[in-house]
Length: 398
Image (cartoon, rainbow, N blue to C red):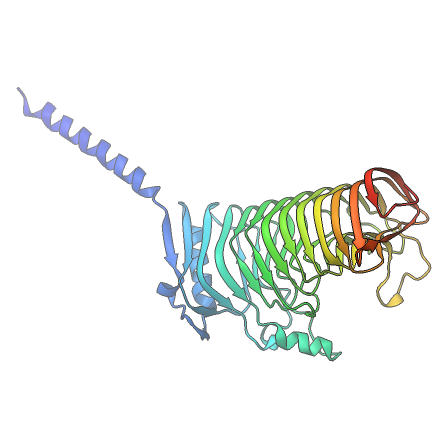
């Protein structure tokens, strides 16, 4: 038997094995540990560049990549993770440690976000503590100093899709804690947000996006637990505990004359504890082409909430630019179902709709709210719809 066919057969088998090994090995996910790239877990050494380098490597990888942040405190200045030129749409940022912002707000005074992702696809942020150290800026704002910056939002995503945020804790933000703007397909789950009840402008989660889900989260802050801005569609909120804070707010809407609307929002199985508001829709009292429709609030528990159910279309902070004007925002198809508990004010249900564009298709079903163990009151103007089941307090205009 000739040795050539045997040699060729062995060569062919070797080539097949080599190709198989190369293919399988190329699919093995890679991990970039920020500590290996120079990050120091001491809370005082600037580790920003190590995170930037880790992102560049993850973006350049053609296989799934993990950026790993080990235990410790890592000081970061403001950083932008841009995915415009990424080859990778499967990047996990897994955080066991704590990210710390500079306590002196002047280090990042002129930026909108502390940690910012834009133009990314398929990014997951898992775990970790984000400590924005916002107390110094809050003190400046409370004192009314003119030189106070707005402050940086802790974590932002913009113009991105297929995003997951899971198990993250955000404490003491200088501005909003989490901001999701112009994104698609975002899941936020198991998030904990903490800031004092008197910390200014510290919204827990701000949404202006399509297809966002918020599940199983606890939010205690000084402004809206969740604020829902213009252009939000297909939002699902479930199993959230809110308080202290200003509640869950659709709006404010109608600040601009030309403005995208809000539609298809469901808020379900939520508890409010000691908040300023419960479920709220608010719009500026001035002309606008905005709208809010197909909004559902159901299975809600109120515990000592100042304004458990409220539509306010006369929003006009400091009475500037809008006194004596009617809101142009059209509110319709709003359902309040199975809402019960206690109000901290006598008026537990307030519908103050626009005189020029009244609310319509407002549905109230099975609502039972009391005030100091007695019957609460309601207030209703320019709202039309229906009421069914047990309704306490009674709502005269429905």
